[in-house]
Amino acid sequence: MGLLTKDIERAPCTVEISHKFESLHAHVRFNNGAVIHPGDEVKVHGPEIMAPFGEIVIEDREATIYRASKLERLWTRLTGDFEVMELCEFSFSEEVKL
Image 1 (cartoon, rainbow, N blue to C red):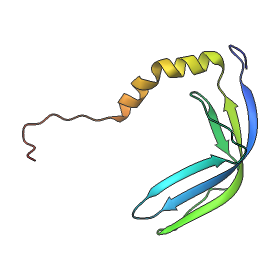
Image 2: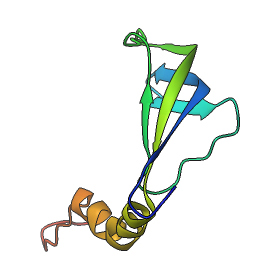
Image 3: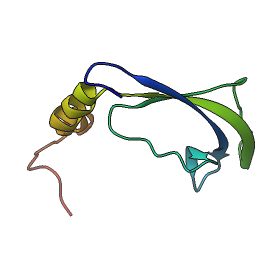
Image 4: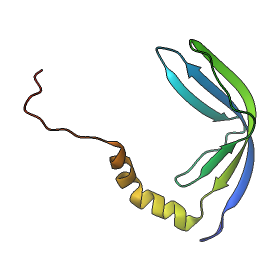
């Protein structure tokens, strides 16, 4: 991995999709121990997974990891906090009572 070049890595993975009242989530675990760093992109191959309500679906797939260049990784670390703040919504109101 260079300053401006990206590496591509393929990894076997396990995809877990939960569509329950208690938990609605999708997780990808890499079976070869690969670790994702800031700026990396992951594409999981295969058809779309649909979990019926009340069930958890687990499938083995293959994923492609596009490793960020050193410059992209640095930029992501520097600007990541600002990106997260866009997801937050703050409201200050005197009408709310606890």
